[in-house]
Image (tube, rainbow, N blue to C red; front, side, top):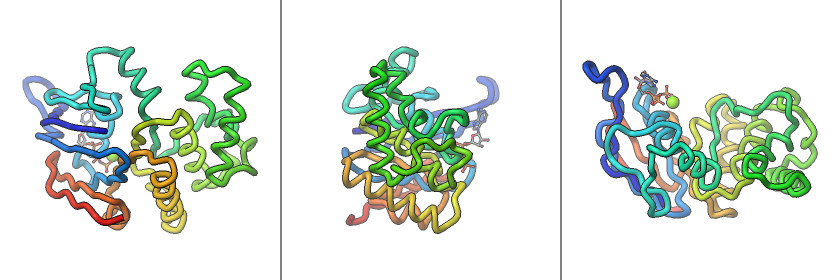
Length: 227
Ligand SMILES: Nc1ncnc2c1ncn2[C@@H]1O[C@H](COP(=O)(O)OP(=O)(O)OP(=O)(O)O)[C@@H](O)[C@H]1O
Ligand SMILES: [Mg+2]
């Protein structure tokens, strides 16, 4: 599904590079629920942004579904983001003036799905995530956990091959965070979607099938658990 070969990334200037990712090689199988664990500043978001084709590596290669990503092509990047990837962020990133269902339907709009098809699909996805009663609410009228469910529905509506989640429970209290994690697990099982979740929370990482720990831009451990 996803293969990283010797990925490197530095910020700063060519004269004074600040290395962030040193030499990351990871293989994520189809259907895996995998956590990337590491402390603040270890390079987790940088790594996730590169996998999400929001940023490019300085060296190394990334394959998505067996095909190397062409980081030089903006149209290709947009196509991958739109058709193969789903994104979930700590801060939800919902559009405040759109209702829950309109937020969920956005990726379909970008793909050119006709409007009569968009609404029923968004409603069905929200229903599936237990938000059938809240489809016409604005994000401000929803709780944090409900907002994250809307964001998850938006990530899943395009039937992505890989969902990338950056601290998806980071702005939730521990009870709601546990619920969202449970939901991610269920989505992984029911939709068979491959999930890569970044977290600094060891407890959350240990609830995943696999946790890859990074420290200072290097993989320091890679543990698989029986699901
Ligand atoms: N655009 C940028 N320009 C320069 N340095 C950056 C940039 N983005 C990140 N960095 C630096 O790269 C390092 C890794 O950042 P990154 O955001 O990947 O960490 P993280 O593991 O996601 O941390 P957190 O848990 O706090 O989100 C940090 O030292 C950060 O300051
Ligand atoms: Mg981060």
